[in-house]
Image: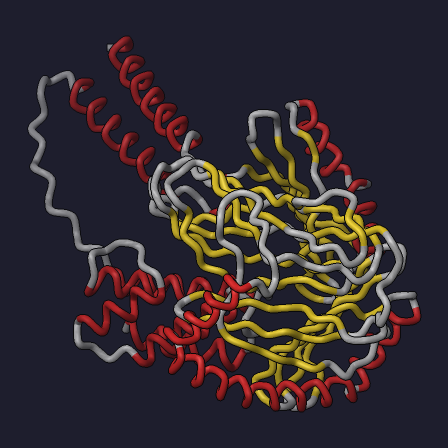
Length: 523
C-alpha cells in the first residue's frame, strides 16, 4: 500500500515537471536594434534597423513602438503594424535620419507586441538600447527648427506629423502633419534614397488609392493643428510649467524635442525632451486641464544616477544581484519608469549566455528604495494560470486515485461527472473591469485602459464569436456581421487603443467614460 501511494505521488510529480518544462520551452520572438553606419558625422544619413527572429515558421502580425531621436532629428513611432513573414530572420530598415548636432545619444529599446501562436497569449518583446555617437560640429543654421516625425499606423489609421523644435529652447513649437508613410519595410540593409523617382511614384499611387480618406484626415488634422497651437500658447504661459522649464535650462539643458496631445485648447498632455552638451538628458511631462496644471514631472539623467546608486546600496538588491551573477547572468542597463514626481519604477535586466532572462524590479518612492524583487521572463507577461489549473487538476485526480485504491473495502463506485457549468463570461469581464479600476487608482493608467479593452473583447468573443482572442478591429467587425450596434464599442476600444499606444494621454473623465461603456456591454 505504501509503495502504491509513493508511485502515485511520483507519477504526479513527473507530469507536473513535464508541464513546467514544456512551458519554459515556449518559443518567443526576439528583437535586436542595430545601426547600419559606423563613424557617424553631422549631416550623414543614418539608417536604424530592427532585426526580428521569428521561430514559429509562420506569418506573425506585430505592433511596433519605437523612438529614435538623436542630433535634434528623428522618428517617434507611436504604433506601427507590420506582418513578419514565415522566414526565421527579417530586418526592417527605417527611413534615414540626418543628425544636426554632435554628441553621444542613447536610443530607447523598441517594443514589439504580438500574439504567440502556440499559447494564444499576447506577448511583448523588447530590443536592446542602442548608443549612437555623432562626430563633427553643429550644422549651420542650428538656430533654425529641426523636425521630429511622429508616426501612427495602427487599427486602420495612418497618420504622420512633424513637430518642429529649436535647440535654443524657444517655445514657439510649430506642428504639422500628413497622411501615409514611407517607412521602409524591406529585408536587408535597406539603402533607401530620399525623394527618388520610385518613392514619388509609390506615394502618388498611395494618394490615389486613399484619396477620400486622405482628404477627410487632412481636414481633421487642420482642426487639430489650430487646437495644438492654442494649447502650446497656454502651456508656455503656465507659471508652473515655466518654472520647471527654467530649472532645467538653468542646469545646462537645452530643449531638443516636444510633443503635445491636446483634448482642447487648454486641456491635454505634453512631453518635452532636453539634452546637455555632454550628453545628459532630461524629460518634462505632465497634464493640463482647463488651463490648470494637474500633473507635471521632471526627470533627468542625474536623477537616474542617484536612484541607481541608492538601489545598489540596498541589501536585498545586493543579495539578488550576487545570486544572479553567480548563476551566470550578466547585468544590463537599468530602465526607469516615472509614475509620479516622487515615484519611479526601476527595472534592471539580466541575461545568461543561453538567452534566459531575469529582471530585478524596485520602487523608488520619496527617496527610498522599496519592494525589491526578481522575476523571470515569463512572469512579466502575467501569471501562467493555465499551468496552475493543470497542477490543481492533477492533484484532484491523484487524490481520487489514491482514495480509490487505498480503500480497504475494495473498489469504490464513483458517480459519473456532471456536465461542468458554463463559463460566466460576464462575471469574468466584470472582474477584469474591476481590476482596471484598481490599476487606474494605483497610477497604472495605460494598463487600466488595456484591461478594459481586454474585458470587452473577451466578452464579445465568447458571447457572439468563436471564443478566441480577437483584436479591437475584429471585435467591431464581429458586431457588424451580427447586425448589432457597434458605435459605442468602437468608441470604447478606440479610446483604449489610443491611450495604450500613446496617441492620447490618460484622463480620469475619459477613463470613466470607457468603463461606463464596458459595463453596459457586459451587463
